Amino acid sequence: MKHVVVTGAAGFLGSHLVKSLIDQGHQVTGIDNLSTGVSKNLQEVANSPLFFFREADVTLPDSLDFLVDQPVDEVYHLASPASPKFYQADSIGTIWVNTRGTYHLLELARTKGAKFLFSSTSEAYGDPEVHPQPESYRGNVNTWGPRACYDEAKRLGEVFCYEYYTKHSVPVKVARIFNTYSSGLRNDDGRVISNFVTQALTGQDITVYGDGSQTRSFCYVDDNIRGLQQLMAVDSANGEIINIGNPTEYSVLEVARLVKELTQSDSNLVFLPLPEDDPKVRRPVIDKAREILNWEPEIGLEEGLKLTIGHYRAMLQETP
Ligand code: NAD
Ligand code: UDP
Image (cartoon, rainbow, N blue to C red; front, side, top):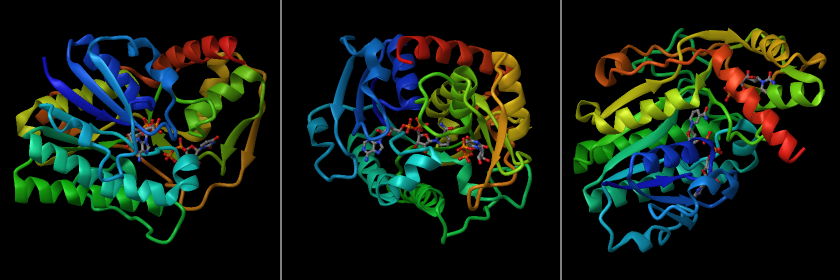
């Protein structure tokens, strides 16, 4: 049994990861300041003897002191708002959690001799001029715009990881995560799948930004969590940046039409202005994940959307 620390445990990915680790019989300490995450995401594991939850802000220097006497085997640093709506609302906090927070958690990993995984993002490539994006592409990020707080903070988080790997030999792994979805995304989260599914199920207009020709590549959460755990497990991934995403690309308009069809919704598609610096294309090259992790996604968008729609339907019936 390992002792695994997960930050951002009450968030979308964190809560799915915590459940998976507990199912595998590991002892898990989840840390979250409940800024975008919700306790409800952890309801299933709240009473498990394997789970301990600590409400804390990991940007504060003493936030991890409670772990001083405990051995720690693995640290997953997932804390950070991920939706543009939320990271732009708390832009300074977003910078801190991905930089100072990353530093605190790397220090924890160093002092405990633990492995460390940083959840970076496809946003590290910005509005890419190379398509699809391999890990070797250095990106096209604007430092002077509404997405910079997230993109550049993640990039600096990666730099901290590099320094702790080269200077302190901490076994670090960086996952550049591409758009991931399923249940557990708040329906007011603002990200495209949660918006479209909620809008379609409640008969509201489906809000396509721009003309919907911008593309994304969507990964179902189970594939993502398997990828993150595999990245943590494989020693040859130490000191590596690896894309974790589904390489099948869709335009946002295609996604809107697919959601409308799968929900059999009467909602109208409406077109709203494209947000500033919204990347025009995004698709991962996953050769590195295939080679080093023996990982690739298994769940396509249509299958994943059907599962997601089922979860949202149930959730909306519970709390309309
Ligand atoms: P989320 O917003 O659902 O979860 C993030 C969690 O971090 C929340 O529970 C929030 O309360 C917590 N948090 C934020 N600041 C904190 C702080 N200072 N101290 C403690 N907890 C804090 O987001 P998510 O989709 O689950 O994303 C998880 C991680 O994966 C993030 O680091 C995100 O950048 C990364 N990521 C996610 C995606 C995706 O598609 N979901 C894509 C790329 C990267
Ligand atoms: N988007 C949209 N309608 C929405 C929410 C998002 O058209 O209601 C678009 C958004 O402009 C972007 C894509 O969907 O082009 C993905 O947005 P999201 O916020 O989910 O993630 P991003 O990849 O931009 O961080």
